[in-house]
Amino acid sequence: MIEARHLRVLRAVAATGSFSAAGRELGCTQPAVSQQMKALEASVGTPLLVRSGREMRLTQAGEALVRHAAGILSGLTAAEEEVAAIAGLRAGRVRLVSFPSGSSALVPTALAALRAAHPGTRVSLEEAEPPESVDILRAGDCDVALAFRYPRAGAAEEWDDLVVRPLLADRLVALVPERHRLARAESVAIGELAAEPWIAGCPRCRGQLVEVCERAGFTPRIDFATDDYPAVVGLVGAGLGVAVLPGLAIESVRPRGARAVTLEPAVRREIVALTLPDLAQVPAVAATLEQLERAAARG
Image (cartoon, rainbow, N blue to C red; front, side, top):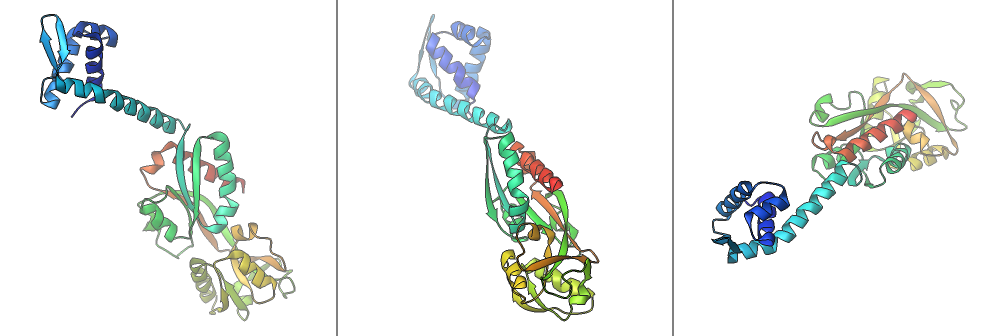
């Protein structure tokens, strides 16, 4: 294997014409230069220099290696500078995947702060609900996944192989039409909505809704189901049913014609930022996780 330090010595010897002069240029001794040249010749398996008295000239192999050395060494220098820039957060890229309400409520604040602190760091954003977002992370197609899970909706060990950064506990709220009999209530038990037509959200939220209702002793009659939170709010506002939505989703949508009511007993979903253990050590990824945590705390 050819080492970069050996290539630098070869170039110095070729430029100066002797081991001693090369040593002076490189700041090392003549024996050290001789030793490194022997190591390089052993690596390539052929002589690179012909010594004749005090004169020294390159062999054909030596000339070829010197010719390529400039490009190799300049490429290594560029790579070292780029890595140093990434390590110092002067550059870098983070691929972020988030569920929609996280994209609107947490991500903008976090990314604005990240850009202000580290303008050289670029972040791309893609939307996906868990568990798809977690699968994208495990497949190596993103660096950070903003995800959520509900109590008892999945085993805690489903994220055991990931670095989990808890962000916030997002409480579910009931959403009813403005003229609904419970629209002015301070709180509502989900059992009080048992006879209502329901509008359900994303598949995971839908499953949680059914589970919460069944614990209250009824199965919800779901008339409409949509992954789009503004559509849920619009359907409720039009008087077509009631819904249970995460508080984060309500923050990101203006509930025209609908009113949010505190749901009792409290049901919360856990919002987290996930990454792979090796990625957690990458400065740009660590900075993104930190800003997401700060954005959640400010909220």
